[in-house]
Image (cartoon, rainbow, N blue to C red; front, side, top):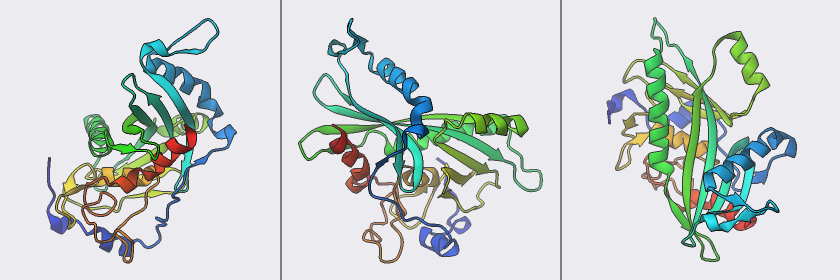
Length: 276
């Protein structure tokens, strides 16, 4: 893990003051998207879910529970925190009686070359996407919560990432097939440099080529920017604002650290309790 000189970065609080235009107020509840938004992927989602569960069906087309896993609930287009169609959720009951909640998110990356000939190479693009998946899953995957009725549920983060096709035809294909949940623009910057990262409206995120690196920001551990921004992508607000209830919890991943707290899973816990 590469660490960046603290002088090259600003604290989250300072960054917030420098970019007051950003609206980080996120909803604390999940809403079902209009049917039209998700209909293009509905049947594919059902097929993928059955394949992932290893389920068989009987002659009447009903799920065969003998396979060990049972799909309890699914929603292929979840609206949260001002973001439409942010991700898909699938809740499974495992053979041992525990539950797994899969969060599926499809992401397309658009790599933007930097100034003065600082261009992305194909190898750098691939490495960034691989590092992104590793850092996000390392931070968020595998956390558990217990529902009010005593069910133990483990969060399983599943990301599907690809590079957006460049050029005019790439933009046309992207317009005709908007199946991704998020588009992420990644600016190439010099190593150790800084560029403001954010998750804005329209399910578009802005990162830079240094955001997969851990950076000291005043907590007891360094923070990886991509892991923090992913929290916004699943509907969570910043916690470092002056006066925020958790402003002093600097180790929180939505503040300046990397710790995922129980409160960060409340959104998906509410979904489980409301849908099963």
